[in-house]
Image (cartoon, rainbow, N blue to C red):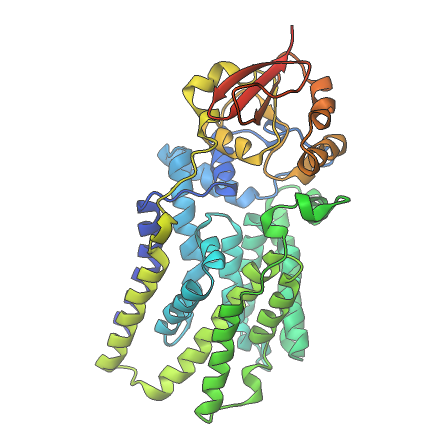
Length: 470
């Protein structure tokens, strides 16, 4: 029976992303550019106009995986995006299904997330490499007692180090592993904290060494978030994932309900909340009030693992391990979890936003940059959609996936455009454009944008392409 239940749980975790992509879902941001990068065979400085101090790839491991898959199978960018969605959803959710004694508790925990906070849940199918780090975090949170054991468990130390090295190489946000380290300290698990710190230092060093440029990689990945969050008016110009979280009140109520249930059944003990897993969830929630990534990518995974451990304890005390009742509970949780996550209510998975498609349509080809040119735009979606569909195009993009990586003078112009989208705001870009360059912007109406110095052609929809007047 335990094997049957575990197989059922694993099947649900694979079928969920397969069903979602089967409904027509496709991410609209970083998953597209990662796939495009793998197919292009180019370095980022051949794709984007970058600051001079941005010299290395921040996700070398993930691009190596996608590039290898592309070369081995001939898979195009679209296929790589679908692979990313499925593989990284499984990577983020697999560990509890394997490591928990009652994996059905993990399905129930995911069901709670699906019901309580769909916005956070949707991040699990974004096809972005941060999901690999989420999976590594789950392993750390479930395996931490091995770090706290008096003699330690060599296998836990080795696995933790290897996984942190892989996360460093694949995702690059290695510095955020200081959050679980801080949770160990807050829980006064000093031995576990020291051992995890050792795993972290060694793992990051190995992951950085795999890039071939360890010092440049570590420096750039530390500078990257500072560049992303910099600026005189960040709240208006930051990406949504850097905006403050809303606090997920319904999910918090579910977690408080789990604590109330523990108290009502007479099983209350302080260790239920005084442990690194729960404290990381609280820490992530508090920091999430400044930036949603702390909550969505660190606090929520910790909260889901904590809830699964609570449910596991309850199930072990009330349901026989090998009985038919356990299978019935697992099957019910699996069906409910599958339906809750894959439900296409309001066409949330099947409906795709066609707004930017005209930019990448064949009819737009005459109005795109010439070989060696630069594409200017005030919308990152132009980059994502066009680079995904034409990864080998012979031009570069002024605005790419992260404005903070732009040359400082161009970043200043871009942020001014976002703050006050006037014709004067575009003037510095227009002044430096060459005949091979193009400025593509969205302007509603039959008249071209009132930006002087450019010759305008309508691409399609509300998009116009401007080039320097002869």
